[in-house]
Image (tube, rainbow, N blue to C red):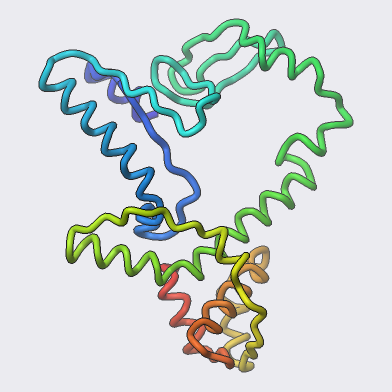
Length: 227
């Protein structure tokens, strides 16, 4: 959509890089490899201005992802013949054979397995988001550390921080909740994500050596996680 507004002012989109799955302020600092890509995009733009030539930046996080050649969007309306229409700028991409073949193979009985717009797909998506929340609660100290280094010392970290290893390396925790702490938790946290947030809070508390989670402990961990 921003690309379309820019076209009104005779601007052309020459590159785009989207970073997904970010939930915390400064979380991008957990992925300096992506910051390097953004840096390259900026360099390409500066060179275009200096040379007065158009330099396209065609990097995509997924090399096999179909993107619109005009606005670089990856959202399309697809008809039954397999033709793609960009949902942003309406560029027509005719006869995208790969999708047409997939469409012909897809049966009604596969619906529940192939899309998030189904009971099992919705459960999978809920678990994915929930686990992401739990991981970010536990990674919040690392995010805060990297943010402080960036703002106070202008340091960008060199290595990516893999949040997936948090779950793999965690030991079993034995934490208890006070009645007031649990009541506050239940009032604040949405029902669908309670078990994920609870797990993240308990793991974070265990790392701090806290064995009983009070109202104040829960609210402190909540603040530390950026929520």
